[in-house]
Image (cartoon, rainbow, N blue to C red; front, side):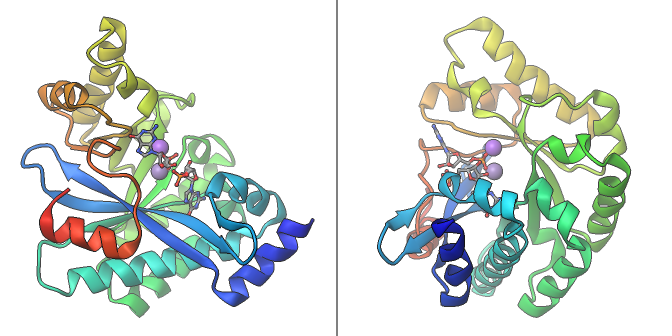
Length: 254
Ligand code: G
Ligand code: G
Ligand code: MN
Ligand code: NA
């Protein structure tokens, strides 16, 4: 429709932008990375959130171009921050399952890493469990080629899908991002704490790191640290913010 035509133009007119949400290492409270989250500065509608155009981009196939733009910009920004000589950060980008169907992601990302100069292990691709569950053999082959480049792979919203433990073992996953629904009521209900803790232990036993999403309160942070969760993200530290503000968080701490 109208929004679809507008999104095609947006790509040409450079109307997309990234906000960044810091990831904190629970061992020392330092900012160790960012998640890039796309927005659209529409000429008349103002700033549009991803939920209002990513599903349409997935349905129309425009996600291939949007995703390509996001990875290019995220790699450029991470390389620029890391060139300053401080502790290098890892940049996480969300990759839709549709990008696996539509593009040769591994060769595309290999080119983007070379062009930006970002070391492969400073890029993390976040995907939902659906990537593990659909077109399994094709996606597994793609993930193995991505892993061979040296990029990190994370399962986003972990615990909300239905990937079996057997799948987790088969796919070359580095990180489990604990869905915020498990973090939400930490400290209130014993069974919710049990679920978050089970994911942390699962990660430990499979050699995967764990990142808690949606941390909003100190009590949740303390509980996660106690469990041995590695990293955390959430409004307690920072909302997703524009690049200049993210840069300040990197220099001064979140
Ligand atoms: O940024 P916000 O907090 O509104 O994100 C809402 C949703 O949009 C999240 O599920 C997030 O994963 C998704 N999203 C944000 N940026 C991107 C992107 O660049 N690509 C894809 N595929 N999804 C994104
Ligand atoms: O699906 P994904 O994990 O990529 O979603 C990222 C989304 O989560 C973004 O829309 C971001 O704004 C939102 N988010 C990040 N931190 C928090 C938080 O602490 N609480 C809530 N409610 N949402 C958060
Ligand atoms: Mn995410
Ligand atoms: Na998530």
